Structure formats: structure tokens, C-alpha cells
Length: 153
Length: 196
Image (tube, rainbow over all chains, first blue to last red; front, side, top):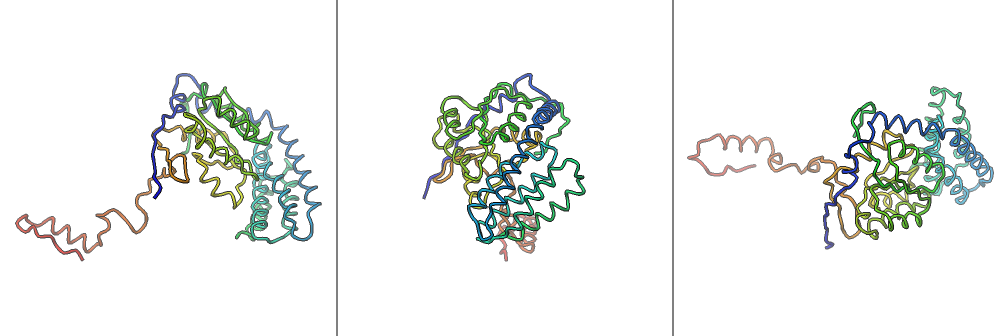
């Protein structure tokens, strides 16, 4: 039987947080949002560059099961998750999450559906459009989730 | 864990030494903007596990925010290293794990590496602050067992599992009535009643 030991460490962070000064919650959140706004143009450029890599990777994706090609696309898509919200295109994060889910399901189960992958990459470009209304994005995202859920184990 | 975003309550991250590990420039930029916005000034920005190990071996850390670094999952390995190899106090440092996506094959690795909590990207500043305040709570034990080293993850008090119950509640309704009746009777008849 393995032994189990409990330790109650002192959490220095707790003491630091309580030291006088600092920020109010409201001010801190406002500052953080303003900081994110500053990097928005850079994020948009980097997300657009990733999209181009993804489109190129999709072009290279074979007609038959292509594990290496799927791994390439996964590695590109996963790097973009989180940037959509900063870029003002939160739907991109959902689409990329759905794409990563799909690729993960396909690689885990050994199934292959190139069009399902393709529709996600095309949706990514559509959702990058800042003029796309939320009401327009929602049905697209619902459709993507249905596609990826089809292959969930 | 919900935080009022308009709260005037104060907190101070000014003196906190924070390690950030993310191998993507965009992920790191987002993290830095959020954490500096929340008031932290001493940031150790690491883009590789090697850098992060160097920092964790050299400086005392008050908080680590570590990306899982999918698809390699090397961020989880770093957290495990921190728990098992780093010297005190860093082996106990609160660790927030961020993840863009966790492949099915990495779920157990993410769960068992010894992080305090996992945050799914995209990360809103409010969520980050909530989680920082949560991991800073004192009194959470660290567990050293054969295969797991890290914070005790049993932080929800859900009571006993279904079907077990506490002893008093284990009794059937009929038996409970019998016990109650027995308790109400005079003490001159102290025999225990049969509980069916």
C-alpha cells in the first residue's frame, strides 16, 4: 500500500494580495481590458497569418487518411485559440476549438472526413470578418459543432 | 467563484513574482497584457520548458501560469517537474494551467500533473483574476502520494457519495420512525429496538 502524506504549505501569494495599495477589482479589470485592446492589431495580423498557414495545410491534406496532415492542421489551429476574443472575433475561438475537437476525434478513431475539416477552415475565414453580425456567426458555429460531434467517440 | 467586476475591493499583485510559460508569441502577449493589467510587475516570461526550469530553480515564485503547450503537452510535464523536483517554496507555488485544447490522450496528463486549476482559452481578465484569488486561498493541503504530488483536488464539499449517506440518514424511513419512537419513550424501557 502506498503512503499518503499531507502538507499545509504557507501560501505567500495570499499575504501579498492583502498588502496595502494595489488596485480595485474594477480598475484592474479595466486596465487589463485596455491592455488587450492595445495588442488587438497585432493579434489580428497573427491570426490572419495562421489562417493562411491553415489554408495551405488544408490544400496539402491528402484525400485518404492523412495523420501527419491532420497533426499539422491541429498544431496551427490550437495556436490561434484565445486570440479571437482579443481580435473582436470570438466566434473564431469556438470554430478553432471545434476544429481541434474534430481533428482529435478523427486521429483517435482513425476515421477521416476531409470536407468536415475543410468547412472549419473556411468558417475560420468567414468568422474573421469584423462586419459579420453575431446572429450570422451563431448558425455557423452550431453547424461546426454538429460536424465535429459526429465523430466524437 | 464569481467575482463582481465592478467591485471596489482591493488586492495587490505588486510584489508577486509570476512565472509565465507559453510557447506562442500571441499567447504570451495576451497573458502579459492581462497580468500586468491586474497589477503584477515582476514577470518571468518563458517560452520553453528549459527557460521555465531555469527560472524556477533560481527565483522564488509566488504564482505560475503555465500553458499546457498543446500538442506537445510539455507544459504539463513542467508542472510535474515543479512539484517533484523544484525546491521549496516553488514546489508549492500555486499553478494555473491554461489550455487552448486538450487532446483526449492528454486529459489524464493535464489532470494529474499537479496544477491547481485549468483555465480554458480564451481567457477573460475577470476569469484570470477569479482564479488567481481562488488559488491564493490558504489552508488547501498538498498531497504526496505514490503517483500524484500537488494540491488536494477535493475542494468541493458535496457530502458523502450517493447511496451512502450519513449514519442517521442511512436508516430507512420506517427504522427512523422506530428510533424516534424509542427516543421518545420513558427511560424505564431502555432496550434497544430492533431496526428492520
